[in-house]
Image (cartoon, rainbow, N blue to C red):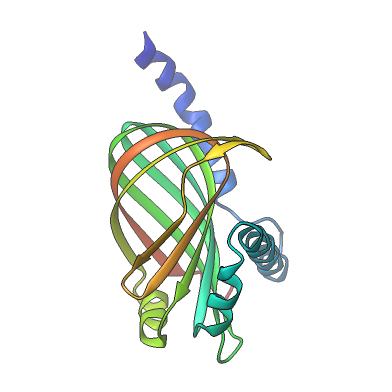
Length: 188
């Protein structure tokens, strides 16, 4: 009976995921501005909870900010989103998309933001041009707007510091997943 309910709700979850993973706006300029607005809001939120991140970003060769929606259904996890990489040396923005797929135990939907701080320029350039991330992930989140709690935080891997901020959702998951990041040709 429970499996039948999930089959019924799955199309709605996929639609929610697609809606969360796309930028608003009709023109490329509107979409770029929407991504930049998301970046500024995310950085503002990050600085409130991790003030030291401001100096880390200022001293780094560059950083990235992504918005991601993730769905976990029993043994599978999938998600998608968008973001931007800023080169602090040149001031250039590279607009990107992302998709992820994982296996493991989980149930729920989660909307979150991720901030990547690159510790050297070759790592940043490799991320822009190759954009793969693999890893194990476990978290619990129950949040709606400003209410609720989320377990997330800071991770240091391969010359990148990663901060994750949960926007909303209800999820309990333990997954192994791969995430692919790629340049958004329509916005660059």
